[in-house]
Amino acid sequence: MLEAPTERRADPRALRYIVDHLPPGITIKRQLLIVNRTDQTRRVDVYPAAATLEAAAFRFGEGRAENELTSWITLDERSVELGPWEETRVRATVTVPPNASRGERYGVVWASTASTPRAGGEIMQVHRVGVRMYLDIGPGGEPASDFSIGEVRPARSPEGEPSLTVQVNNTGGRAIDLTGAVTLTDGPAGSRAGPFPVGQGVTLAPGASGQVVARLPATLPNGPWKVEVNLESGMVKRSVTAQIQFPDPGQVGKRGSVISRMASVWTVGAAVAGLLLITGLAVVVRRSRRSPRPPTGRPRERVPAGR
Image (cartoon, rainbow, N blue to C red):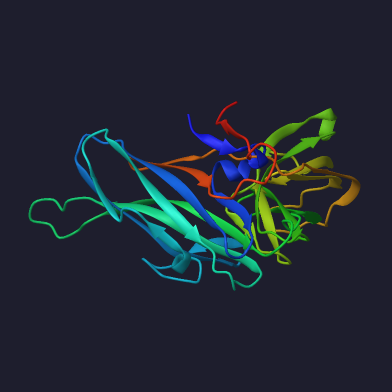
């Protein structure tokens, strides 16, 4: 069980990524738990690398590409050797310069391991797992996160597979990672279908726009249908209900006629550390922050993860 700061315990994104708002001049620390989930001894390299938000996606830099954020990160260990099923901890320190400009920075802390080439071969596989970083820098409070749902457009592929494309606009001051689902009701003979998940991997920078797509079963009739689209990023949730009709194969249908919209925004809570697994390697991140106690009163409360 890992501890987490109370102010982000309700934020699902903070359970997976390093998401924070920091004033210039502050130093924070994160502890990474690296676990070798294989039956072989592994050397694991740990390092920060650059990332950007491009074309509605969080994109990692090549190899050990650097940016401003990576220059703020130091690690107490750059390489560790783990026996089968062994684990260790590595501490990452982020020091924000006092003259850092306002704005959000993106990066990733990688744990990387390479397989041994087979006898007589030269091909070596590299496996790595990383924890994304979304750090907003600036004085005062954290910019609000928000987004709006725009056009809902049905379509069918030439093979007859129906889909729904939903336009999303990031209207807040922080990047958003979109997840969600669509549900179809009031179809032919009162039928319903779903929920169907929207495709993941859509990340929008502040002020950016993009699309999420839900793929649906080819057996789904054209309709008409009432579709409910539920999207969220962290503690921000948006819903729209619209009337749609799927077109024939190979065509794009008319945009849905909106019936209603709903919104839900939760106050920032706390985050617990997340667990990421890939090819037998796991990385768990947890954080502690060094900050002076106020002259009076109790220090910031920290709670165990899962409470």
